[in-house]
Image (cartoon, rainbow, N blue to C red; front, side, top):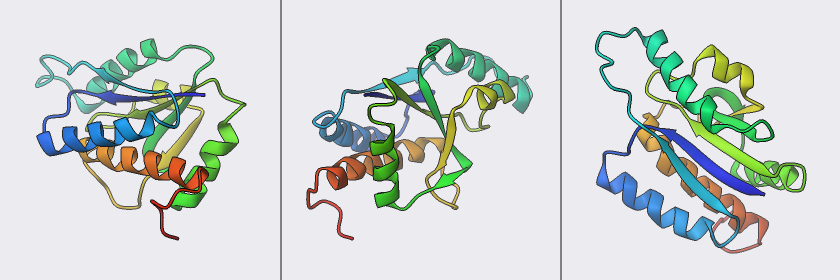
Length: 156
């Protein structure tokens, strides 16, 4: 299984970029992994929230291939403990060739994106900025693989 994290817009804070890069280097030891960044939308000041969602959604859906399994990182998604998330990933292994996790922009996802999604996962009941979600997700993905490999990173 290959995993791709698709994120909307560039990461602006250097501490987030450093953390994401650190965990990406760790994750690729376990699974083929990449990050795709959708370009920032231009001239959005005169657009409604829904119009921004729709434009970001069109860019996102162009990146998703018909056989891809798409999981939205969404506050309304299924919540896991870290061990449960590891088991969830393990359950997709062998059934899914390409797993895409998607982080939306600050306004979330369009209806078309929700319709295409195969699943939704929530990282917490708390709300995080779409920038912070990148780092939190990367750490949890790394944690999940160390759990699956029986390595000592996670202390249950």
